[in-house]
Length: 464
Ligand SMILES: Cc1ncc(COP(=O)(O)O)c(C=O)c1O
Image (cartoon, rainbow, N blue to C red):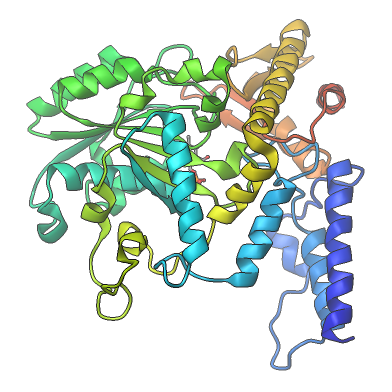
């Protein structure tokens, strides 16, 4: 088999995979426990390379044992599959395979990224902002803390933390990436202060103020508060405008982690959940989650111009960042990466093709499905809704028929369902030990019929 023959079969195979996955007539995963994986699937690199025919077998093997994230029964993650123009963008980006470091090696990609940053900033309401694409929402959250520190204490760039005892505030429902970030930045996880949330999972501004005052008493320097727009588990939106008042009162950087919830800004109904967002200092936006552009399509955006250069520049002048007519367009010094993949093209093609209206419609459709599902849960005596969803996370428990521990029951049930290969849906828990299913509405292939079938099947699993 020559390369051309390989390629034709390969493309056909991928098309077939996408089609059958989206239809959902196949298992969402062929589940094998990790400890038995290599007994079943050979994974070895040999001295002699393999032929194109054998490479096709390897492609088959990979597809067979991978989770089909565009399957209608995949509602596990905050992302699911990808839209078609994004796939076109990803392939085109890979085919050209340049790096975003300078305008010279990535002229079109640089301009596209600039346009996207401009667009996202204008949606948020950042009038004189800037931004950069990063390796994920986690990285954007880390950059927020780093930029906050760098703006307030510019000499940390050269001298490090110098014994400053910084404090970072997030809600107790915030994403775990903040814990990683304070570790990496030398701030320390004990200085990541968790602010209480209300029964809807939203940060309580008065509690934030108390925590700030406490930290100051302990000689800590309150550096930044990060609100979450769309928490990972419950999909809650912190009251950004009220938190902003506290942040401004104590002169603290205010970041919004919109990794999951940012697209809410694209519809008038959901936009209300982010009142006051235009006044904050920075924002995390993951298009690969709800906007379906495939991993990774993440932005760190800030309303404060020149922050990124001040915080991230350093070195590279001898061979990369030359003084030339396009130097102002080089993005490399604004980034923490040197080589940087062109992630912008996926979102660019997707937005051009789908349009603002298309994204708003997609969001409204997902919202309708989430509400339909939540209502079904509420109406059915065998299900219990954990909180009233305001976004696209529906958390619930299945009520057992017998007198058994409901949390253990839900935990076991979830694993049995996943191992069956029929559905892939995550679970989560509260500090009090409550364990529940977390159903995410990021998948446009999931229909109301799938949701009805899912609930039926859950009861079937539960009672057998
Ligand atoms: C609220 C929130 N922030 C940040 C992240 C991290 O994003 P990423 O997976 O792109 O690093 C997640 C991931 O689920 C999230 O839910």
